[in-house]
Image 1 (tube, rainbow, N blue to C red):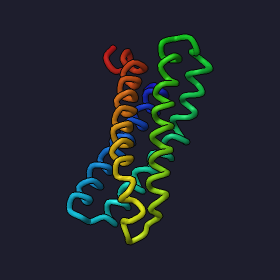
Image 2: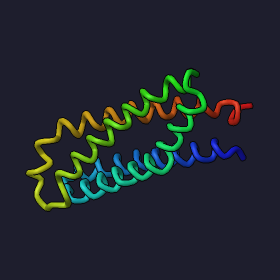
Image 3: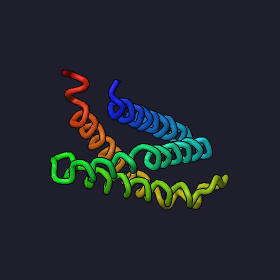
Image 4: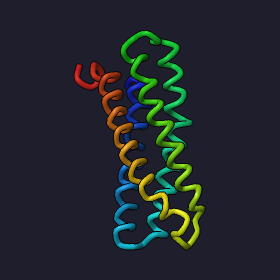
Length: 141
């Protein structure tokens, strides 16, 4: 198996896992279980940051060094910028809560939560496109 295909597949699988955590966490919010909602969001942000540091940053650097003028090398900074903005917003939102029982610290950030989720979905979509562009020949011959 191709090493790059394996790494990018692991990254994609983890990001889909993060999406599942976000959806389940949102379900807890809908049922007014705000503490569980926050714990799922904290877990999602933490997992997302680990994958960014362990897989995405090294992959980004390798792509920029190996293919700086290719379409992949030109597309990667847009994905990275959207992902960085999403990660920063996620840390800001979850960090402001800090596992408190009350919602008074996070409720005012509700509109930012929605915007962050939408930005995260855009980033995930760009990542899925990126995944298929990079691995099309390995996956489909």
